[in-house]
Image (tube, rainbow, N blue to C red; front, side):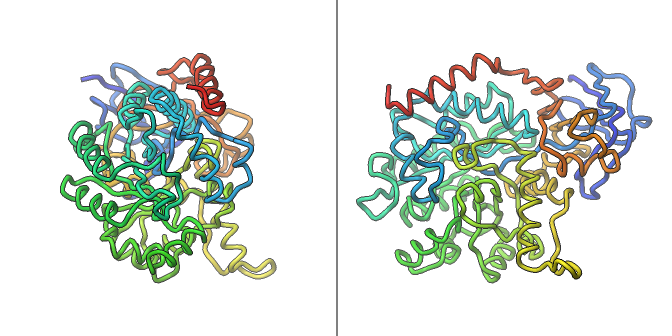
Length: 463
């Protein structure tokens, strides 16, 4: 079994149950799992590979809980740049409806490469359009080639415009087909044990694009197979109005009526939730994927993350789609989460001249959202922390760079407070994905050219 020794790190931020931060630390890895962790002086001194991380901060790999990889093909489309969510979607649905399997494969690699270089080692993605023979298999194959862990969620849309939904009829699917494919994907790909590289979740897209029957059947099916459930929820005021007019419920109440609450459920966004609904999340164990950049980009609003954390809600971090974020940078997203939570606290409670009246999100809490918090809502105990028995998923950032000049007072906080950077090392299950700042699993210049060609064909409507 291959072994790896990490030593001499300026600090190892474990994010373990005790939130230990180990100066001059490291750990010993065997067969993809951490065996021992502590000060360098207490570690073995022999391994198949030894990585000296002097002057580096070492963290658990960051975990992205909400994304749409395919959207890397439609960044900054002019007609969608300044639209709110519903109009943004209506602009882009016809373009996405032209995708082919190769587009899914290419865009997945692009998104995962960007995520890997920004510190992400596990990503959950929601693919909910399957035109022209596209399958979730295309995404799973591409993820295997990049080397990141993936929670591939089988998204779906079944409620087209003619039936009162938002998406055009030509991008929705038959519900029997959706459920049959969900079973196939779970039985083919889902891994449940420690160290799983691929997991499947079921993810009907949103209250305005699927029927109540599909939501109920997806929940029933997921619980038969023991997989998680995911959907967008309470993202905008438009959605809130839609749910009240069509279903007679606010979004969270609608989910309750469909048996879509529980520890196996996580929602993207949850911007428009009130105190009673936050308590429902806390009491039932629902998780929330906080996507601050996307919420800002679409002018959707600011999610009440501090209220959720104080109520005991499980909160993780997501970059969301690369056409509603236009990037996939996990460290930048953690920083954005911290800053946006502070802005909300300032607007709603802080006095300019007197003492602060509301708590603010700290740098360490922001990192916790992206590690332990995200792992918890995906139902994983083997990632999100560095501890004996955990997967050897970690990142390392060299402090000897311009962005951190003068920040030696607290190197760990510096990776959030200072300008976002690319990581110097990213390791998944003991395998090097990023080494000395370079992706090891993809020829980036060649791939970028392929990706840009695919994006241009898609926009022009060419096959």
